Length: 253
Image (tube, rainbow, N blue to C red; front, side, top):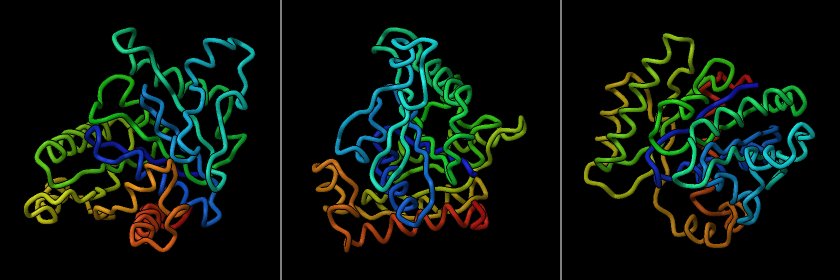
């Protein structure tokens, strides 16, 4: 079992990439567990026809000691196992603490031992890498961190901050940096700018994604691109990203 965390600026496409890559990996016969680490609890929605599944935080609050894995882990497209950490209402409580509680609950209920996934994907909120939002990077959770960015100024800025955090945390036994995923947005000299960012942190661009009307249409229909447009060029790009994730682990999951 290998575990990865996907970070990046809010709105950069982390959840879209996570869902499409999870579905692609599951289609290859791998057992995938995707864990949404965002209080909005919409990380896995594309794998459930747009439906938001009950969150760990809210369900545990209601069920208490009777909570079971079946209450918080749901099967989505291609059999991908899904869980959403959830969080407090805006302005009430600490969202980062909610992530800590949710991941500790999944661990306590032995989710990894019982489901035995080949790959775990943590889809983590925005560019926040302090407190609970760094939890997926910690020892025992993710092995590698992948960062989604475009060539836009703020996306690169966020990606650089996350790269620095990963580098600093690595000395404490946290996850290592696996590489960047370029989600093209049409910025000037985009490929060159993101390659420079990768070079600055001695890492690679492990995959690229072009703007695609097929992706937008699939999201409008609350599903992955492969389900709605199996012949789309975007499907090939998501497949290539999924293959690159396997290669990052030497194809040994």
